[in-house]
Image (tube, rainbow, N blue to C red; front, side, top):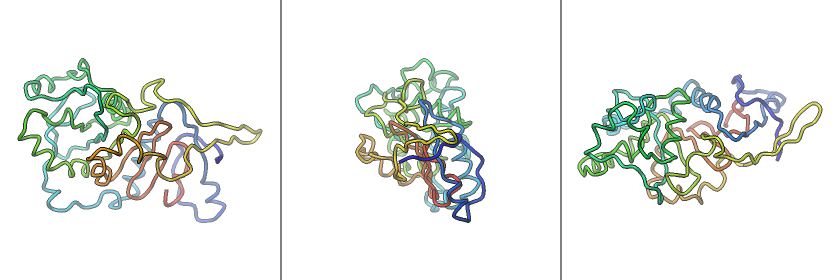
Length: 272
């Protein structure tokens, strides 16, 4: 399938009303070897400004009263912090796999709270990439289970697990690391050389056509990934109001009101 090429992130105009306006609104985008973070910002801003309660429903009282997670990662200071009041944070959903995942232990808490403490630690690639992404789109806080829950504190583990649903529900959005089979797989397209370009182009004198990697509205093959086999992922995906899915070939955005991908410029079309 081919689509007419358009720029990576264009202004979002009113929803097309006529057939010609609809056709003009449809286009493709170049999917390069690195993720365009401005496009992700545009998806998030569109959702916040236009979708309203559709993508941020009122929480049940039982969840509304649930306090924030104890810790979040400050990606600017590169350390843990106690979660600020009314914190706007991004959550990460990923698999540990066979990677040697660095875990937050009770005896390390004070050190992890020091500025720049995470820079020198063996943090897995997926978490590092998530920190890089959150910073790049202008957000500050990230929640990751291995670092934001004290892994050898049974009382905290039990408390955080009981409110896991509210952690994902209250997140600004959730990053889903759907490619790779371990925490060291990384997020394709964040670091240079971490993603191959598989999209093909066909140039004419007056236009350029792009092959569409995935003709469906949802990420191809995501149900067959190691991420989809985790016991917790169903809960994390369903409870998240917005998700940013990293596949091997491109990034997808899905919220309660729309679905977007790097390859398809359909932000002006209602229902996408």
